[in-house]
Length: 255
Image (cartoon, rainbow, N blue to C red; front, side, top):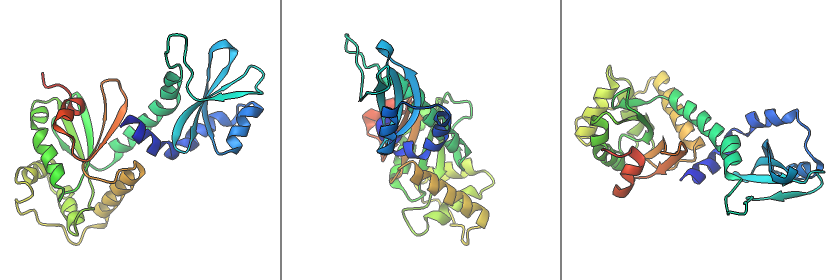
């Protein structure tokens, strides 16, 4: 899952990384890769006097290794005598981790409804549609973690599944207590008589539009889509209803 989301995000944040490299001259062989469409994001020290470069090509992170004189370049993973992949650390530090932090900031700034305690140790962002049965199923399955104070799920509402999905999402956003309203709606499995907000006020419509744009930017095409940091600190994306044996991986262990 990690590789999949990173491929979809690489193109979004290249410009900010390019600024870092703009003032640093690159060897001619590395510049040749740039001319072929590769984006150089950062550099790092490599064994035997080589200079390493973290790059992006066709939405995939890649490492380049330049010879001491800068005339020759090797591309791909570099391994030591014990079979350790020496390329993963610089890729994570220079490419994936910075992008993950930027994505998380975007999620934090989106419009969402909290499900669970604010001091929960684990936060999960979830793109959900009020008419999505799988979103409700995941809501039901997550109760032990949420009610136990272990997880807070932040619902980034979008309206994509049915003609009244945007108006239902708008109605939830418009409530005096959206968290309570969402809980009652999910507990009833969408049958508590929630009245769609029609017409949708322009301010709320903009929130829905921004949520949809963010969902598109992240390469998500389904609800629910879950975004969270795993136990190793990597940003993960789960599209669609998680399998039962994936719940502990996503939500954490209950005990």
